Image (cartoon, rainbow, N blue to C red; front, side, top):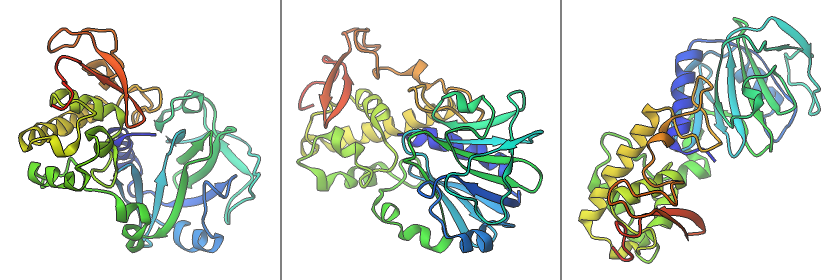
Length: 318
C-alpha cells in the first residue's frame, strides 16, 4: 500500500496536469473499481471541469465543478496514468458494461507518447493502454486520458458530493496530517496518549493516530529518534516524542523531494521510481552498518511487521 509521500507525489503531478480539463467520457470494466450510479456519472462527472486535486492521508481527491469529487484509493496495485494525447485506437473488452456517453472504440496510448503516472510499477506504466489491468478510463475533451489500472482490483474510484467526503468512515477516523504547518510537536505527542500500553511501532502505524505513516517511514523515523520500536508508548518521555515528531516530518519531506521510495510498489508522477531509498538509513539495510554508530542493522518483527533497527542506537525500553 502506498505511503503518504508516494500519494503526495502523485497528487502534485496530477495537480499540474489536469486542473481545468473537462471530462468527456468515463468507462469501466469492473463495478467494484468504479462503484457509481450511471445517473450520477451522467449528471455530475460527464462535462464537469477539474477544479482541484487534493490528498487526505493516502487517498486522492479530484474536485469537480459540479460540487462532486472523485475519491481514489490505489490500495496495493493501483495506478493512475495520465496520457497527454492518443493517436491509436482499439477495442476494450468491457466485462462490466459501458458507462453512459462511452464508446467501444477506446483510444490506446502509444508507448512513445509522454505519460505521467503514479502507482504500482508494472509494465502498464509503459505499455499500450488500456490493458488487462485497466479498470477505469476518463477521457478529457482535449483528447487526453486518465487511466486507473489495478491488477488485484482492490482499489476504487468513487464519485460523491464534495460535502460528503469528510463523512466517509475512513475520513472520520483518520488522524491529523503530520506535515501540516500548524501541527505541532505537542499535538503530535498528545495523539499517542490513548495508546499508552501499545508499542510505538503499532501506534505510529495506526492511521487514526497519525495519517499516512507506513512501515518504511516508521522505521526511519524511530531510528532517527533513537527509539526502539517495541517500546511502550507510555514509557516514552516527551523529549523523545519531540525528536520523533521532527524525524517523521524530515523523513517524509525528504521522500517527497526525492519522489517517494523505490519500495517495489510506487513511482512518482512522471512514471519514474523515487529515489528516497537511496537515502534510507535503516529500512532494508539489515546486515549493513548503522550510519550513526557502525553497528550492524538487524531485522526484527514488531506489531506484525518486519522492522529494521540498530540494536545499539535503539535500546529496548528507550
